[in-house]
Length: 112
Length: 111
Image (tube, rainbow over all chains, first blue to last red; front, side, top):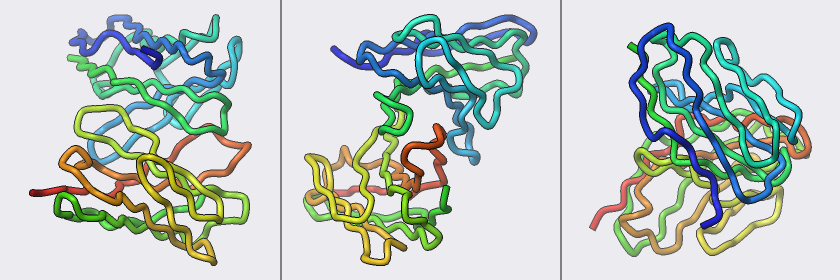
């Protein structure tokens, strides 16, 4: 089934540990995005990639890094997790940067 | 991107039309109106978008006023599965990667 998948579904992580959230899409979309969603703050863009090989910073990039080695995958890495990174993380993709975005099911991350 | 204003919550009877309003009085000429929804614990789902003309797809209709300062999303026959938070987003086309999600409207469809 075509779409966008994320892994893991949920994770509990000790502070200071490194963690990579995975995102894969099979729609051959050029653009991909990472958002976090926190109660009362809505969805906020962390990083984005307009095409394979390029990335850009969103509104809350600190503490996160991304890579876009190919069209399908867009992993999000927390180098040293902190409790304030406890959130639900959504990956999204769009055919081009200005097109409608399609979202994955999310990863619920808890940092203790 | 222009700011949007939506009512925090609405109720609708199953089978009836749900009309969700959005004000975007500062919208500029090249900004589109997008609608997304988020069902509890799921990722946001794209519904529809438009510039100035009314639009319809298999999910909903979008009515944009002539001055473009407001719009209405219409779910013609709401079902219980349409219970969700609905977000109205105004966005430049061709520029900007960010979707600015406000607080949206919590639509509750009841029997």
